[in-house]
Image (cartoon, rainbow, N blue to C red; front, side, top):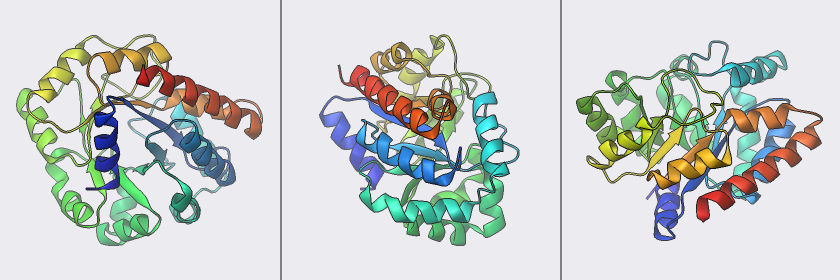
Amino acid sequence: MTAISDRFEILRRNQECALIPFITAGDPDLATTASALKILDSSGADMIELGVPYSDPLADGPVIQAAATRALQKGTKLEAVLEMLQEITPSLQAPIILFCYYNPILHRGIENFLQQIAAAGVAGLVVPDLPLEEAAGLLKPAGEMGIDLTLLIAPTSSADRIEAIARASQGFIYLVSVTGVTGMRSQIESRVSDLLQQIRNVTDKPIGVGFGISQIEQARQVKEWGADAAIVGSAFVKRLAEGTPEEGLSAIAQFCQSLKAALVK
């Protein structure tokens, strides 16, 4: 079993819903990112999604776009992100899932990229602009290296497409809760409940719901609808960016603890 599959299996046995926070690497700097990963790990995160800052983040809403812009302005590069991860992943319990657009992967070459992230201790990979039709060339080598490539299902996906994505996705299935970009929403669309059931009918793989979850009540709602994980991004990125780095780290620790408490009740 991979690190991600193993974590989901433990959570399922304990009847817990996973909490997967997202933060952007290099915002406000990589030293703070390293501290944030350690704090999230000790504050209830079951897995952590780490975004690689990218200049054209098509799937990201304004909060994460702004964080990526700040990180790029500071000179954050993928190589520096991986060097930081290589130092701290041995001390983390939560598997790291890298959120990375496809162009940096293509630029480095698939095999080289996968070798680099594996050496850094990355357990999973989400590539938001990689459609199912183009994913085969990355799925196979990633699986061979023990890295789970998780695919996304959109609310607009057809039944046949949902089944195909569910069959191919590794580690878990990433259900996008809204049509559009990431960001904080006032409520989760009720159609997510139906989509969860539809996916559950074709696979027993874990299902994580993301894009739009920003409040404790929303995380609890997707758990009650049957999700195996709540993925929370913009709300963490926003808290980490407010005030001094120390204040931001304190804020995400408290928020992470509150979210996880809601997911185990």
